[in-house]
Length: 260
Image (cartoon, rainbow, N blue to C red; front, side, top):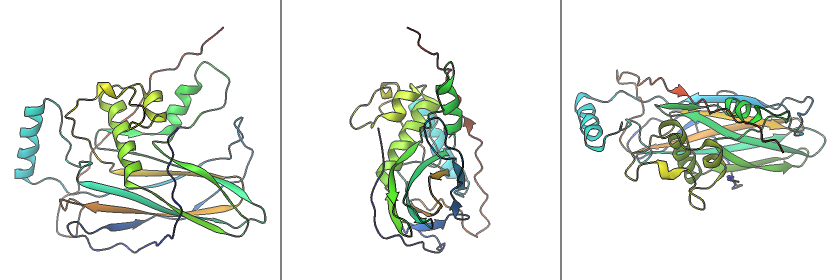
């Protein structure tokens, strides 16, 4: 199972003025407060969702012509917001305000300009035909951790982890890869399903980042998204027009229960 780890110092930087190759930080819209309640059949606490959309400008006429030429040459759509040029990391800080130790669960979903991933939809498909509790598979998982009472931990979801999630999303969204296999395997270890993806594919980067958080104690989650924009595509206050793709929500094929 894939999982991102990496504890360290978290610095929630203010939104910076963008410039080429300089990281820009976007703070979480609001802290996420864990909801205490009855756990599900998998003994998982209720999940709370929060997220943000990264604002990119439209391509210029010349840039669009270049994209169109690449699309014609390669035979598939070439994205405007490309993984090779947009580098994403996420730093988080989890604070346990409870009087008891607890475990937090963190996962990242999101969308590119073609496909949106929602693990709630995937969980429904995995649950179809059986009476088991929903199985949630984040696009970018984070290894659960125990937080002692009255303390805080921090960590980083690295660019490599986002790269894996962006590859998986494009594979299941555009190339009909088997979603349940692609999502749970590290492509560097077991590239099952990725044989459907063209070797020369140009991968889209995430333009939407959705954070799912839960904990079995009273906790809060703050996070910041770090973006390095090689081509200066992030929208600035210069009269640029907002790039507003309408990605299709990924609808996995129904899973059929196996009977003995």
